[in-house]
Amino acid sequence: MSDSIASVAIVAASSMYLSSLSYAKQLRRTVFTLPLAIIGCTAFVVLRPRFSLTLTSSASASLLEQIVDLLKASSLSPRLAYGLGDVLGLLLLGGVTTYASSFLSLVKGAVRDFPAFVKNVKEGGFALIKDLPVVKKELDKECAKAELGFEKDLKTESRKIGVQLSVLPSKGLAHADILNLMREQTRKENVKWEQGKVSGAVYHGIKEHQDLLNEAFGLYSIANPLHPDIWPSAMKFEAEIVAMTASLVNADGAITSLCGCTSSGGTESIILAIKAHRDFYCQKYNIKNPEMIACTSCHAAVDKACDLMSIKLIRVPMDPNTYKMDLFAVRRAIGPNTIMMYASAPSYPQGVIDPIQELGALAVHHDIGLHVDCCLGGFVLPFAKRLGFKVAEFDFSVAGVSSMSLDTHKFGYALKGASVVLYRTKELRQAQYFCYADWTGGLYTTPSLAGSRSAGLISQCWASLVAMGEEGYLMHTKSIWETTARIATGIRSIAGIKLIGEAEAMIVCFASDASVKGLNVYSVADGMSARGWSLNSLQNPPCVHLCVTVRHVGHEKEFLDDLSASVEEVKEAVKSGAPLSGKAAIYGMTSGLPAGPVNSLLRVYNDVVLKL
Ligand SMILES: Cc1ncc(COP(=O)(O)O)c(C=O)c1O
Image (tube, rainbow, N blue to C red; front, side, top):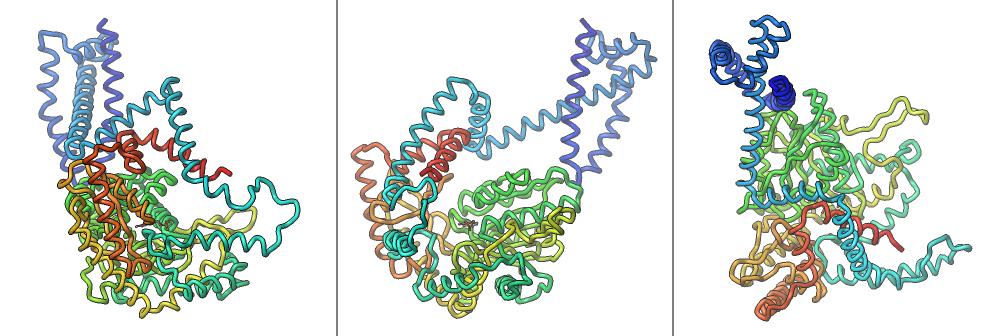
């Protein structure tokens, strides 16, 4: 009996020891490591005699006593047996402390963010039961239902366009027919954004600018920047796009090492920046399991990057009042494996600028990276600052900012497929490159993710920047900034909804307020859709936003009138007790579910998009 208890104890102690090892790893590189080691050694030396004494003199046979007896019985000298007993006792203590501290942090997590805790518990529960036949059957049933719904919403129109082609036409179609079909479709499909009713998506779209970009693209549509020897002008344009973009955020030109690279869009720029930080800091600190810290408001591209590169993403909450990254939580999240922090200027959901200065100070203190996602703000904030509008610090003038992403295909007014990622140092940019010296296809290197690219994307982007010039960007920024302010003021006066975030850049985000019980903000978005608007519905918290672009300038009254009417309509529906429908019903359903089944529905969505 005592033998088996002892074996169990030894196994338990070893497993606890292993878990305490990972705990010790967490403590590595923190300032507490040394004092803790000193305290631990002192405690061991002081407590050891007492510990041994307790073991030998205790009347009741404790677990450790039994282990010591067992060790003695296996012909170990008593001294060695007690010594091993001590070590096991300490490991046991260490293990218990580790589990207690994990339990405490679990409780603390639950207290700090109860909804997230509940979601995690549900997630864990779902992972346990998801393969049970009954659960699988229910999930399959829901997915089939969702597929029908998505097909109705997405495919009803698209299936009416031209003829359905599932194989190549046996004989090529006439050029005129191809172009007529496209002209006809785009004429109808472009109406919504041309009327200024779409949030974000089309940032400029004025005809002369569009014509210039299309022509610039056409001239280089066949060129490939992978071959700079053949198209040196494409290489020149690319280098100049990077330099011109860098000049907007370069602390009055003070950083001579500032450098960068073009990419296909915000998502790629973010993935590249995270890759560069991963390679650079993992090598610098010999980190095997890199972690990065971002706010829950960060763009989904960060999750995508971490998923692709097996980086642990530690999400910290937003401050519940300002919707900015919670600095207290960031400080607590920094650990020995942290390679970087990620902040937004402004964030996609609420359009707030995270506290870049404070984060920069943390980056300097811990010598880790700080990426500023300026994908939305890159071609607005620098000009707003020059125009004298109040703009929080966000660029390389803040010490500690190691990289930034700025999308030329958003407020840079270029066509889709163009963005810039910038680095404070050349070493960091070098960590972004992919180099393969042994490829059988020859020496191979690419700066970004793509292999072959269209130089048309570069030529049209260069054309956009130089056609706009400082004057053009200043003019558009002024009108966008003023339009945003007018819309934000209007929203403040609509009873039933409230502004969230302070519309400090070009995003106005609103949620339902407490004055009307049961008013669902997604129903308001549905009301706006019925009036021809296409706004963005967001979650955690439930809210809706309009990303103000050149298209909305002059349309603010129309927007506010429609918004007031939509809110009134929802108030009436609440009074009459009408059931939720549309987005309100969808978000109502998904917000209560763990991510697992919702992700299954999202996969079905992609399946439908790719279906004929
Ligand atoms: C703040 C922010 N970062 C990144 C992105 C991703 O950009 P893209 O869609 O070009 O990949 C967006 C897109 O809206 C964004 O708003």
